[in-house]
Image 1 (cartoon, one colour):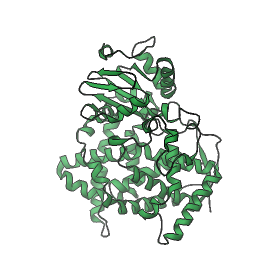
Image 2 (cartoon, helix red, strand yellow):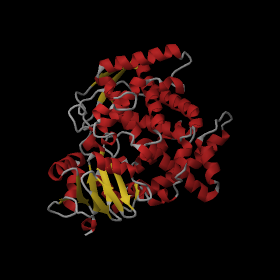
Image 3 (cartoon, helix red, strand yellow):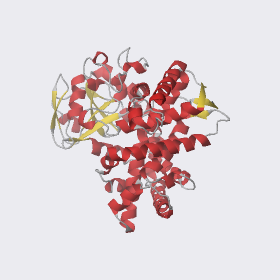
Length: 450
């Protein structure tokens, strides 16, 4: 067996049904199951989940070693591909341009991005139906999708008649469905991803229409779709690469950010004192930046309380599993043992197990953070024991962008609405595997114009 080639052999977690037993328990409640295994076997152990050989670690040194692994030795990208390919047709990944994400995140694009976020958020909020309660996570998710179409395509894509057609196709491809609804993943596999491939063809056809509308607009702005077409060229191959990379960009954009913003809105509705503090911060910045705070990088950078609130929301709701697929034999130090790990094993941790592992870290308090950093007193065993946007070379390069978008959306909501929470004590989903969790139960807010 593959696991027996790990030397020395780590503690082994077994269930009655090999592969399947652990897999079923893992899918039912992944965080709780890994906490149970940690209590039973210690900070590092091996478990086979549906044939995925996982060397799981939660020790401070193990987490430090995990984040220090070189991509060429133990790949995050290929491990993510292995998970995502259950839902997403693999031809999308074959066309992925690894450098594109960093190109899109260049600082020079940020002023244009801020204007698009602010404009699309305003348009969306003006159309919100607040005659009854609003499911805040669905509403923020839809807004984030629409903003994404404006950012990673063009403004025309975020407007009628295109954005809702794009949304329908992207909803079919949504990776989140495979995280929170394993039955749907099984149906996807059984069908040969037929619905997903049909959605890709719909997106290709829509992109041709959107590009034509953008080109015909006499007041058009330079947009991402222009840069992508220049990058990938024309013809059938160009349209295919445009579609596949647009899908990758929008899926990556949506995977965590909308849920993080949803939790911020939820907490602002839940706690009037936090809402008052956020409102006061915005008002104070408007006195310094009378031309507007939502499109000023300098103003957004000074919006520190909302940044702390977002970090705390992400920390507590984080349900990401961090995987590295071993590509060549590595030595892995967890502080108690140095393991020789063979090719094919996945070295992994799940952030929700350690992000709230102390009494203080289980308590929600935005003042845990100083801007986007936790003080050492909360992570005395090492900064890697708590993770939100990752660490070191594996840190998310879009963190600053994510904070900017959250601040713009939250400011726009607070400007327009009073909020009455129609929930009591929301908790992150116990079943979610991957990303920032949605709440366990429906969370609705009654918005009223101010």
